[in-house]
Length: 304
Image (cartoon, rainbow, N blue to C red; front, top):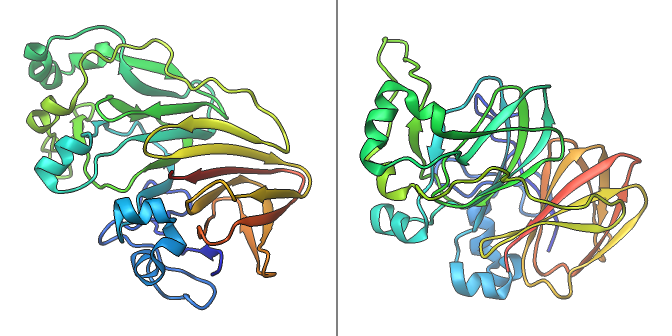
């Protein structure tokens, strides 16, 4: 099997590429013998060799992760995602637990993660309607390298002036809670999902510092997030690096945040990864050698 690079899927807020199996937004392979196939078609063709046996047993032919680069040029809407149980009941889909890694941020940029004070569920709808819910949201100043885990049920929003790498479960289910009283071209307030969100929101989620704590290091694997839905590591590489996957029964996704590098498989396949691009290493490939330039920063994600 081959390491695969996928074509970018551009949307108004996207900076770079996605690796997506969401229906209607499927990524397409742009290299190798599978060139032109969508990600779901590749999963269907290779099954456990691509996903890993445990993932194949659990997800079947569904690819379990969705990754994005988001370039927020204005404050994006405040949202919440349902968990697996609620999403399955309502939509027949996975829930959405996710994480953010701040690739770049203007001075003073903020994002929202959770509440800063308790609000009553009975007051929620009125606070959304009059805009006072803004006073209850936990706003966090951010800088390059900050990392956040956003569990299902946590209210969240990305602020203007930042680029985010987002790793999440494969789901397109999002409830928009609040949109700063913005209006559409016809002068109508943008659609909110106030009632749908009510059951999904964790109103007990009061947090002052939601940042993931980790210690930066070069030329090693640095753990950022380990949860039941995915594992994500940071790799800052300045020299050739051998990555052994013998203990990982999963595909691996790499997002290049800066610089560039070349991935070499044991079979001799080489593929370049540049800033803003992503690749998928199938589970059947048990090691790669990564040859970086002097400023390569990668995120590595997989599901176990």
